[in-house]
Image 1 (spheres, helix red, strand yellow):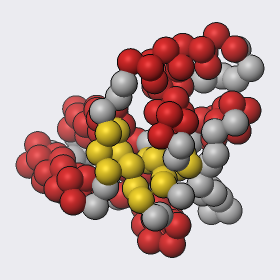
Image 2 (spheres, rainbow, N blue to C red):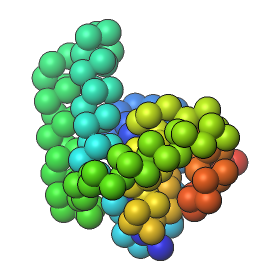
Image 3 (cartoon, rainbow, N blue to C red):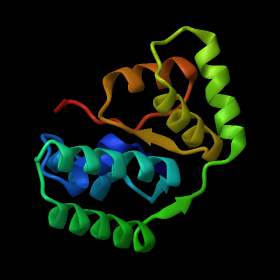
Length: 144
């Protein structure tokens, strides 16, 4: 099955994060095809910009991390463009009010659903919402 990565997984893969080892291991063992959307890439860029603003990393490190991500996502992933239908589907998810979804999480869940992919995330609230919405998850525990 294809695995759709949300930003929490991408951050773990390209920065020092408490989920880094887990992300690497899971992808090596479970991924037939890895999918990254332009939207998840945008979220990743936002996290890296925040790291620069908070001085967790410097500008040179940020450029290197973003370059590594760009190269990896072009060669090792299927890159997808977010379609308007994913935004509409995310809106439908948010209107159901069965979950505590935030907009970005709803969009990522909708993208994964539209691709028929399993969602991989380290965000517990997003995982719970995806389960309620019937979107398959790539198991990321027990090391949460």
